Image (tube, rainbow, N blue to C red; front, side):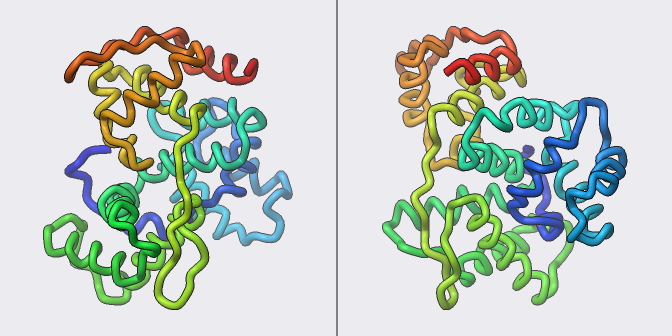
Length: 262
């Protein structure tokens, strides 16, 4: 996810889509592209209450950019974990890949949600989201200048997506309450290994911006890795700014098999 990536309105195609993503992962097979999955989903009857147009938008505009990228590695990984991880942990992984695909959501969480949390605020408001977007427009972060109606709509989508992924609660007046949101050891392990197998060096893994989606800084990440070492999943050595990790698993498939045996 490039820091220079422009903000788009693609999030409007679907917010968290947790239930729908699980259903689509169950239908998806390696090698399928978006149109293949759409045909299978339409024929399955699993989405009979949804219009064909809506289903197409979910698959082509939301599922594909989130999970059918990098050779469909996210979909491949998540499909192997459906049935192994609790729904809340799957949801955290969906959150990760959705933020990668929608830079605006990732930056909103990193810059606004966690700032509000650390300041002791109890809520994130529509005005917080609107202020974030208007500042982004002024700084040239959007592909074009958004209209006022688009700003209002995207503000609502940012808060709604955060609620779908468990960061915020139900809307009350003009704000949503901040929910308890923590990374769990299995999710931390999956993220660390996924970054490693993407080719990042150990120090780069620790400093990846993905951890900030869960409110973690580099020192916090090292603490998470040390907890994983107690589980026997890796060995971590850290001195000053240098971190070295010995990785037990040699592929994400190995890791998924290891999770299945826990």
